[in-house]
Amino acid sequence: MEPTAIAQTLAWLAARRRLGAGLFAAALVLYSPTLGGGLVLDDVAQQAFMQAKLAGGERDKPWWALFHLVTPSRELLVGQRTAGRVPWWTDPELRIVFFRPLASADAYVDAIAWPRTPWSMHLHGLVLYALLCALVLRLYRRIVGPEGQGIAALAAMIFLVDPTHAAPVAWIAQRNAVIAALLMVASVLAHLRWREAGRTRWLFVGLAWLLAALLAAEVAVTGLALVIAYAWTLDRGGRRRGLLAAAPALVLVASYVLAYGALGFGARGSGAYLDPLGDPWPFLAALPGRVAYLIAAALALPMPLVWRVWGSPTPEAWPLQLCGAVVFIWLLRHVLGGRTDPRLRFAALAFLLALVPIAAAPADERLLLLASVPGALWLALVIMEFARSARRTLRAVALMLAAVHVALAPVALMVAFAGQEGLSFGGSALPLAPTLANEALGHQTLLVVQAPTTLQAAMLPLARGQVGLSVPRFSFVLSSSEAPSRWTRTGPRTFVLEQPEGLLRDATAAFFRSPTARLRPGEAVTTLAFRAEVLAVTRDGYPSQVRFEFAADPEHHSVCFATWDGREFVALRQPTVGESVMLAGR
Image (cartoon, rainbow, N blue to C red; front, top):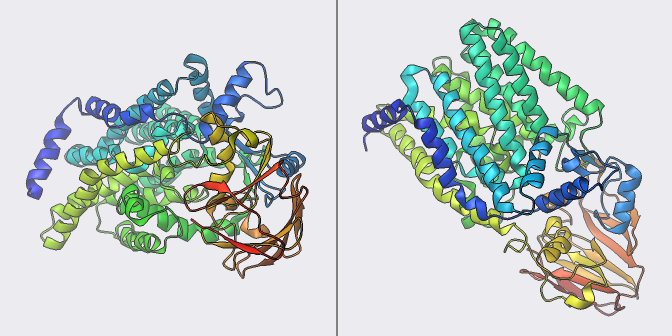
């Protein structure tokens, strides 16, 4: 199909007055597989908390504590570590407490209106996402102007089918991102109306929407990225006046961030969630790799299809980071190029600025929903610019980008839905250890010696309970490693776990300890079931040798040792004194 024909088709499509309604309906149809997704990971804990709160329980926690991932109390956290509710390597100073009252209030609608009916909860989130798709089209139309309505239509289509949106729509606990995005887009639209029409009331409307977005999710600070990018590139009053007009939003966001930290909210002591203000060096060290990964996830091949071929997702995959870096350099050219379409510079700059606060969380494509608002517009502008080029190479690039982000993206979206459904309890992605002695396990302490990731081992009791299998009295995670490890019995109750490349390297293990507080040789932690002592560490600070001394006889019927066999958790036969066994990695 010739570029001219494509442009004419898009122009015709954009001229339809009911295109917004069409996008709304298309979102409902395209994302309808999420209705059968069930409850995923955090969903179960959140639903249990809300039901207990509505019944008069959980009196020691506020109603909006749905997103308190790790308690801010050191004493309580140490107690949880002792009982195995968090891993033994958890930093006692760890705190991950998010303040999202608006998203919490939205979740209570589910708990009150249709409790224990997951498909209704998913329909609730799906309608919100469909509204977001329609509102994003309005934003694009206002930014590109009357002469670029075909670009607006293409950008809205790219946004609609973006496979990185699968998790925020399919995962109920991630709905906060959809709510924040909806309110953020409304805020930016109000800001644009103020700058174009000069009516001051739209300034205050925009600030009110932005504050509401921040109360839904912290990631809404990306709204400031769009406001600043607009001031720098498109404001009719010029760059200076545009930046002055952006000052109220900047003051609002800065006040919010300062108050947020002063009230004790945010993350501290984690290697996954980083604190850009309180502990900036780990954040700055992780920023290039995380941003490169996010750029690759947003602009390169759809991640669900990449993982289907590649294998397990990991932000440390250097080829993806290299791809992201190449796109980043190319993107900077459009941001800094003075003769480039200012709309292109706006979209590129807004996208880049939006990635900075997102990088404070673990690099994951599910975080890209808000950044994809300018990202989809950037892709549409690049496709149309290259499609009109006289150079065959650029026209070929335009065709490739359109094929990936319009034609291939829906396929990747379906693959992402399948993966998300697998994370629901009873799904294929969550191990259940079905071969463990079911009746006995209900009276035992489960000790998972090695898991491919900490998350899989930590979720094992909850996953078993959701499908009707017995749940252990206590559960402890001893280590995680993708590579095989050596388990050596050195005494009647003592063992040494060795992995020369280092244990606890997975992202979910890093969740519990900051890279600035690495475990050191001689450091020991005592729990109800064992005492763990670090004997040696790798050059980059990961434990390579850990000694475990157990409180009970390892052969006693009250304990059950398990490990990963490459496919599932299975019972681990303990070696005799002086004997070693190899534990499988991923």
